[in-house]
Image 1 (cartoon, rainbow, N blue to C red):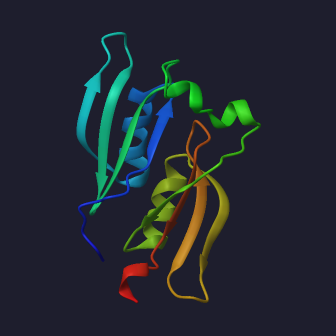
Image 2: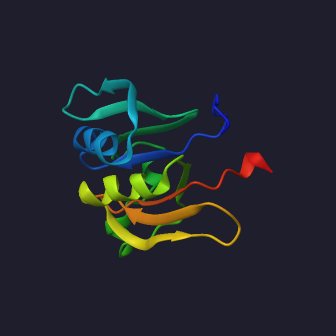
Length: 138
């Protein structure tokens, strides 16, 4: 598996970013790389890592960039994109996420093109895809 550094990094905003940072680490196996509070109880900027990948996130706020974003609950649960994360043991990852309360939207399955995968939503409704297929392997 390719071990970074990432040059494409998904960025998300959460209504309760501190709670979601802890949940993403527990459920999906991310690790905190940096968390910067905004001085108002929220998160100005955070970086979570998984393998060679990174996710950046912060609290929902009505700033210039924030006004261009919408949360899933404001769009009837729909998303306009999805983070895709390559994991080594997809079955174990699926079980961990499910046990932590991830809402499974596409059940774990072995894929005809190789590997396995599943889709889920986090507690704030963001859509995620996890799979063991490594597109870098050829």
